Amino acid sequence: MHVTTPDRTVLTRARIAVYLLFTLAGIAIGTWTARIPSIKEGLDLSDGRLSLGLLGIAAGAITGMQVVGRLIDRHGSTTVMIPMAFAQGIVLILPAHAPGLTALTATLFAFGLVHGTLDVAMNANAVEVEQAANRPLMSSFHAAFSIGGFLGATTGGLLAQTGLTPAATFTTTAAVLTLMALWAARWALPRPTPPPGHPTEPAPTELPETTGPTARTTPETTPATTTGTAQENGESNTPAKGTAHGVLVLGLLAICCMIGEGAAADWSSVYLRDSLGSSAGFAAAAYAAFSVMMTAGRLAGDRLATRFGAVTLVRGCGTLAAAGLGAGLLAGNQIIAVLGFACFGAGLSCIIPQLFSAAGRRDPARAGQALARVASLGYAGFLAGPILIGGLAEIIGLPLALAVPALLAVFVAFGAVFL
Image 1 (tube, helix red, strand yellow):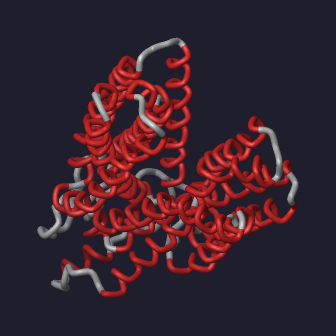
Image 2 (image 1 turned 90 degrees about the vertical axis):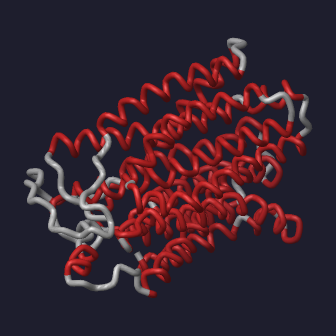
Image 3 (image 1 turned 180 degrees about the vertical axis):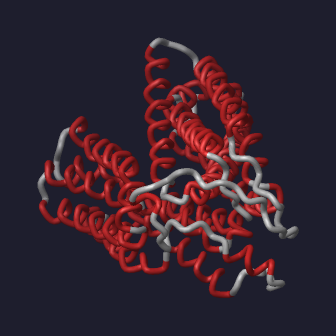
């Protein structure tokens, strides 16, 4: 993946396009989540039968992530992500018209397939924009996803309160997503030239006038150009064994991080209510604090990465996550526990964006495959996290089980050196 530097106008529009797509993906997920109770009621599903249907999203997302990497590397991230952005609105509508569990599972598989494919493609495009800008941008892109999820969930909930059906909610949302996709399609970063396998020297372009600390050259922010040089010298385009192992390590760190995210989503409120005896309303504050601080951390993440570098940032974030969650568990106090989950969210906030950015830089000619591998491993961790914590809680109790994500955050802090 040769990344040439576009002019300032093209680069600014490309950044906006990526922000739009991350927000679009978040809105789709948030809207769907808000209307799950209505779908469940409309189809008269038990909790167990609903969980079977929801597995369709996971299966579809993992399937999409397995195949999209090669498509990105062959055809370019923009070529893949724009059709998926348009498809995201279409597949959002389908579950509302499912007549039963089998059809619901099939439509959710399609939803997950499109969402997983879009996830990897837009992250690959974000890496290209970040490299062209020559400064960290990935955390703010992921913040847009979090904001989109909040907007989608809030709007979906409000529409549910008015009595609007899931079909009408999803159709309205799909119309908004289509407009966002149209805008992103017009401004998305053009496919880098030359295409992989046809190395020629790109035409010289003028760098944007970037000065100050964001323009300095560091290992974390320098665009990857060594692959192109190697190709021009006639070296093999096959990734080195160390590169493959490096991507695997990044995937392992992503698993550790996403286990923590999944555990916080499903078990933070349960911990406050069952282990600390809080009210149901106050228990919800644990995950709310986690989510708010994760979004805030991602909004600040690019500036922190520019100032300290990716390795130091991930090391510090892992330490903060471990210390925050550990303190919240040890204190046995409701308020401190909420603050602990807030620190846990702030700590985890910048880790995944930095891992994805590092994966895209590891082997630029195969950035799509590297990102797909790391993303799919991370997603597996997110799915496995709640199950792991639940199983351990049966054996050693929930407080000790929740110590596992804190220990994994320590592992991530030590593993930051591999970025």
